Amino acid sequence: MTTVPEAKDAYIGRFAPSPSGPLHFGSLVAAVASYLDARSHQGSWLLRIDDLDPARELSTAPAEIMDQLLQHGLVWDGDILFQSSRLASYQQARNQLTADNRLYPCSCSRKDTPRIYAGHCLTNSLQDLSQPHAIRFHIKEPKFEIHDRLLGPIKWRQQLDMGDFIVLRKDGLNAYQLAVVVDDIYQGITDVLRGADLIHSTPLQLSLFKALNSTPPRYCHVPVVLAADGRKLSKQAFAETVSRKSAVDNIRNALNFLGQKHTKGHSVNELLESATRSWNIQAVPPLRGISEKI
Image (cartoon, rainbow, N blue to C red; front, top):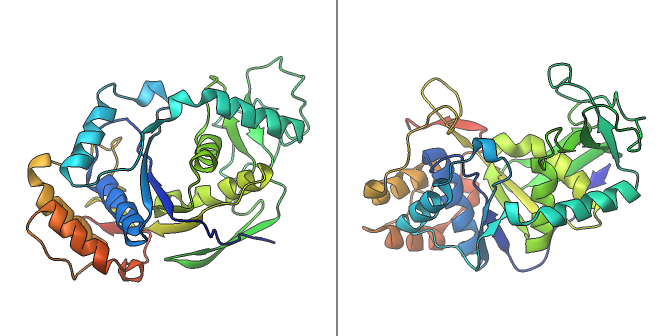
């Protein structure tokens, strides 16, 4: 079993939205949680734009997201990192993984691929590129274990909870998992606080960190906001955009959702300063999802 070591450097966190639209309440909750965790540790909070899928992106979204964050008092540190500017770094990582025999071409269709990929194309050679194909990463570790700061010990097992996954899509676009890990390494991220809907990505990313000879960050997965019908709030499901005019109420609601009951203030800055002083990660409900109607 591979047990993930604890990162020990000065805290560096990040918020990495995709520019498929402006922020909704669920994404604001994730931003507030990661911001407060960073600030309560006297750490840095970075903003990264996950702009690797042009077909799903809106050209106006990055500016809207930045404006929404600023209107809610969530001021990031340093320059914004756009993943679209990092393509050469992703190629370099793939070159390293290719040299280590961790990548292979896969011509399986999405329809024919089970949730946990069993390695049907594992014996394919990167020299045999006669068919349209994606590039998959081969997970060698039989198990992974972490101590999530909110959820506690979590274990994943090969072929039951995780399987080989795509790092380069058939259309030539970089896939999420590799880009995230390469950029977390580049930015020196020590702590990842994100929604529990991404917890399934954690063992995949852990395997990449190990393959790229890098120490993974600490992880904390907070509950996602659910709509009245039980589905996760999302831009694809047309979740309502967070209004800048209701910034104070939005921050109060986000803090309430996160279980932070001892904050005071009449402005977003006062609320965030109070919440930073009293931030308690253990007060966050350790659930995968909670209705927005709380």
